[in-house]
Image 1 (cartoon, rainbow, N blue to C red):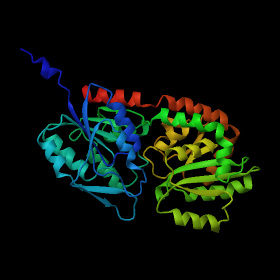
Image 2 (cartoon, rainbow, N blue to C red; image 1 turned 120 degrees about the vertical axis):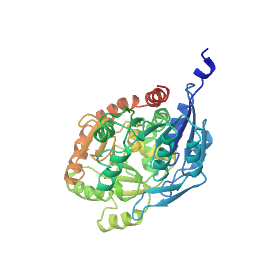
Image 3 (cartoon, rainbow, N blue to C red; image 1 turned 90 degrees about the vertical axis):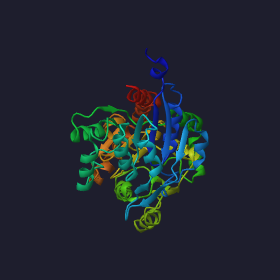
Image 4 (cartoon, helix red, strand yellow; image 1 turned 90 degrees about the horizontal axis):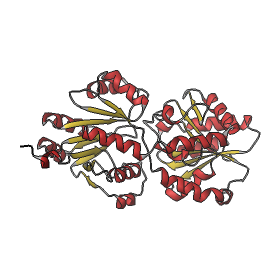
Length: 388
């Protein structure tokens, strides 16, 4: 006789990640409304030192999560990236078959690979939620690691952030069972703030000491090397000679390079054209998006770039470097913005000028594109991966 209770039993699923960000918290809250699965989230740390999120967002979590106590974070020398060691408690759970499926998300080396090997040894199904493309897998060591790691002997299935990531997976493992899911945010939350603040645009500019007629080019993110922010200073210098209207770059965030950026801005006599703004919480950040005319992300290393999702919800045209992971998925060249060659600052300045000519039209198209990149599409993909 078939045991129907056993057949209908939900699979126990573990999401293993480095940290729980506000974005992933919103996603897991949405995923918790899907009754087909029973999942827990385990993270290596609450936060990483260069992330300034207010952890109050975790009070809104409707899912089970745990910060693993026996994992230790180490900063890679000379880099703004971190590795994790330890994690024997969760490795033992895998060996004891506590979970049916483990999904690996975020940079969890070295704990992540160790856990993956333990899970496969115990015949636990494993899924790699990969975020890197060839642009971010840009050294011999990284390529060698990916070649070993993206392997059917370690992972049963793969989820790719977008088309560029899928190309990487299939290059290293042509027969990989791969699913594509674009990386979303809570569109409704950001869109509602756009509607709330858009009529106060000039008032907000005045409060920030900006002139009503100034065109605003916005960057949001950390002030670290991989964001390539000094290129924006060079671009601002070029635009001084090309623009026949007042403009200003707003660089909002913070990080290791803040002092160097401020000094270089003064040395280049760009204080009238670039303003550094400290890290902002949600409502104040929404105000910055509202007053912007263009959003730019010049990163040299960017697996996705969720700030692009945010900016698109505020009807902003987008300019990104060709190293930004969401470039082909969210930015359609000449339609809602431009993708420029990272090594060509002259091209960036020209793209900014061209975007000003079509800013309103491009921005409206951004809003339409991002509407379809939402939690529904990614959660349906995740549920399918976990139940088939």
